[in-house]
Length: 288
Image 1 (spheres, rainbow, N blue to C red):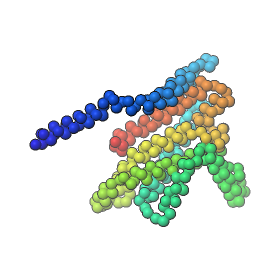
Image 2 (tube, one colour):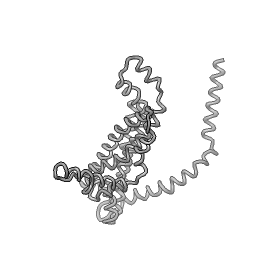
Image 3 (cartoon, one colour):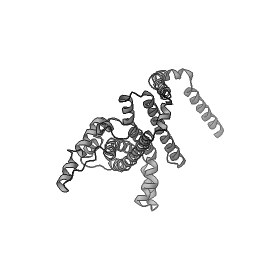
Image 4 (spheres, rainbow, N blue to C red):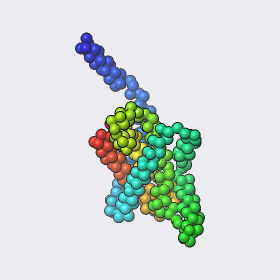
């Protein structure tokens, strides 16, 4: 009897496999493949080739990789994006778990307020940072009142960090809230019944359960911070971050080769960091 059931299950699995790989079903992929080819692969290929063109004696890639200014910009952008990602994950995950598990008056309004920054473009976020920490901002007036000196940091990396964090935290909150609602509460109850403390339950049960969501959301935050332009441009074109450098090279100097090379290297660096993090999480058992 068990053998017959096993054979029946094998036949059903093979049938599902055949249905999955039916040639006719590939027609459904044609629209997506056409869009991918026309609006992603072809422009990307042109961008890669453009970065290899020479202006003078060196190609765009060599000019970027041999320039301390461009390398410093890439390093600074990467560190800023990583810092924003970690801070957003820390703040957003705690808030997301709390909001997913607690019911109180005004909860819906609070969630709406916390996620409202998602509706703002980067330029508006930069303007808000200026209103907060610019020359005529809240912190400037507060500093003048307390110590007789204006506190201004909107036009520095600190202001840019604040702006990036502003639109990164809502993404984490929404993702963690959705992931928290799907966690198996019986695992936490079992851990508590075995004598685990609150922090032990959090570290051994909740964090592993949320790890796939945290990794995917962290990847989005990191990639967004690496390439965000509107906020950085609003706060000042003198900031040494790669998106602003690409804009300056492209518009002010019309050096298309270097601009393309910077774009390709920025994308490759972002992809490489995300790949390393994903592999590390898989090896640690946090992501299936």
